[in-house]
Amino acid sequence: GGPVGPIATLRTLEWWQLPAVLLATAGGAVLLVAVVDVGLLGGALLRTLSRAVSPEAEARFARHEAGHFLTALLLGCAVEAVEASPMSALANRRLRGSPGVVVHAAALDAAAEGRGAPAADVDAASIVLMGGIAAEALAFRSAEGGASDERDLRLLLEAQEGRAGRDA
Image (cartoon, rainbow, N blue to C red; front, side, top):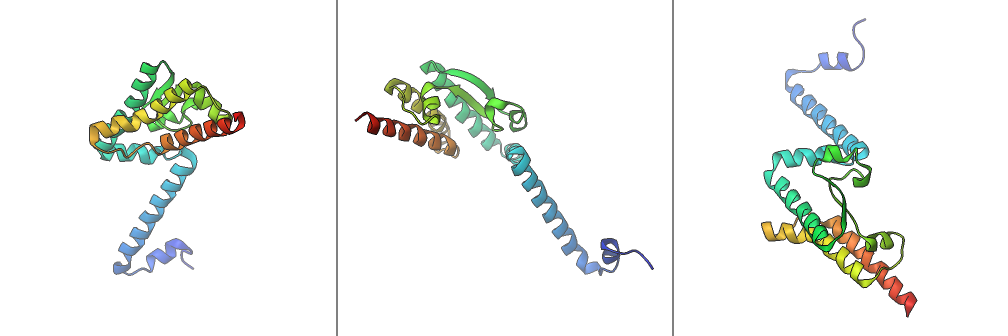
């Protein structure tokens, strides 16, 4: 006999069936790359590609992270790490695979441990968290980034509410 399996099937295709086979193969390859990117690389490949394709996305990211950096610096919060490259961020433990600015704020540490913090620390952490969104909105009249910042702010404020309830 002749060849068996997928190669034999490909040889029996008519010319008009080839585009559908190529399209399905390309779609499967893109899906596989996306799954590997999200599963193993935390989406770093997609972030890198989207920034390469969209200069505005790169500018928004830079402005957003600069807002965090500047507010942290002005409020005296320690900046522990800064990384703009999604691929380089994968190697930095402090960034947990996501590019950006890592700021040490006592109130965020307290919230992560489920406890409250002094009001001044909460104020500083809140300003740093929202500094990225504010900087992006000032430059572009809207903010597309900041979902994780909003989540972190919510956790911070919920920890404060929990503390206020225990102290009452």
